[in-house]
Image (cartoon, rainbow, N blue to C red; front, side, top):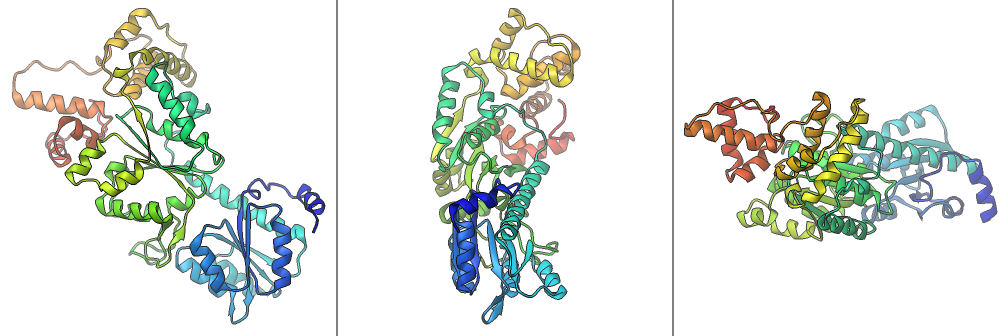
Length: 462
């Protein structure tokens, strides 16, 4: 097949946006069919491998990631369907196109049950197999994108994340420069900084400025997933792996294939999970829960924390080897109180954004308002400032920072003073008890006990 005919065929194929970056494995024991598929796909795809049996295919699958497998059903001593069923039992979720010369209803039903994404009858024309490949790649991309969108609680602004790294201070100029330097690489990045300093926005900027910006960005809050299910959430599981595993399921690493996995609040990972994450970073493979097979991954990892990881390493609460693996490129986001010159651009940006969202006229930002804002320490950082602007728009006027809470009764009782102080810190941390405990210098267990005594909810408006 000539390159000219390839171009002609491509002109009649719609929606092949994922074809150029696809990595495809062909498994067929007929040399002529392998050569035909390689000639058809190689000029259009990033990588095409072709083998004649499932043993050789298994070695390739264990060594690297493939976006799609084209599998012949009759392979010498066994069927492609039997091998596909084994792959699914082992937790391999790569889409498979089954090709066969026998199109009886029973084979078609077995193909669906085994997990084939498409079914193509031999002999087929170039356009038929290309359309099947494009359908599978687009469907897989759409499935990942839908999964990511369902997990997001808020819709990010349409502007690029790098444009939302706001500030004229030298510190933020250095952050933007570091983002642009690190973005083109696949190196692991560790983002540090207090709550509300835009760690996720920085992670998104790294992804958006990378060569794989069209691939998924999957954010995960490690502190929000129960310890007993986080391994399954990250790595996936096979049917029957545990009591409630009624079917196999892909993990978040699978949905981030080719893109970025953002692990926020990485310090909250249990120690046992830290060891498994370290293994993934070193081997670039994940093992679904209940599977004996390790699946190669192609994922850029970004981690973030508001905790002091070296201190946690010293205390034995975070693995030193994992810390050093994560700390390849570190981006520290300074608190707002250390870059007062950034308060005005933040204030004006939030006023513009929120007035549009709330359909309310923007309030004039006077010099006296800016002076009050610049004198306030903003323990909740940019997130607290944004909330203050939203409150001002709704009320139609600015009040003093920190003055929205009801007046507290004056008392010298030590227990009351302690309670008010702890609840204020918890509110400043947006209910994040791990961060509040760190700021207070107490253990998380102590803080949980105090909150239980006072009937205090983490998200209470205090």
